[in-house]
Length: 227
Image (cartoon, rainbow, N blue to C red; front, side, top):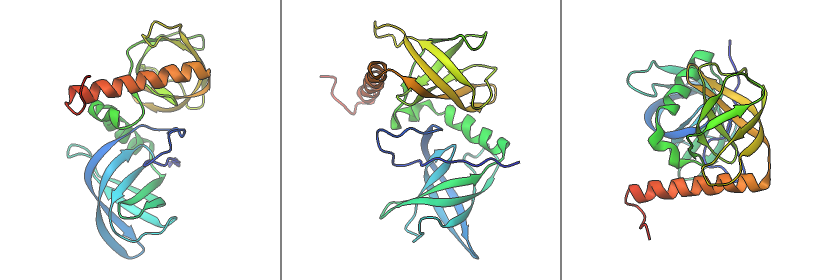
């Protein structure tokens, strides 16, 4: 069984949202186009694709057979992909055309175990309880962004389920109320949800939360003055 992925991974306009999170990567990818095979290096990994640092001239829409091992302890993954856009002088973005459920779980579990990379995209840590009238169990958020959040739970709901969520941002404001949809799950870890209905004021509060978290990360890393 194969499931199609539709995700543009890098770069994204600020108003766009991703179905899956992404992290920085550094591993070799063997690419085959037609009867030619060539090496490339992945610099970004997402549940829906890869960004390759390569000067190989590949046109948008080119089909690529990619083989890679995302980490030494993980099995090799083979997947069909296509070039979804090209950044001249930088590389190409590959969109997976089909991954098995097991392959997708491998990638998602790896991504969610790399918290140090989270400041590279518009999400920030958030430790807060999630309330939903749609399910009996309460869960906790792992991170949040303007487009959605990851909810930690051992019993993730099926894809496509819509939820009415209520959670706090720890900013002394009222609880955020949102309608969201389950877009992906990570076995024994939780589920990613995308906001479908969110008040503009609450979206702005989430944006502020993300910016503050990113600034704190930069200060802790010594890349920005605290003043």
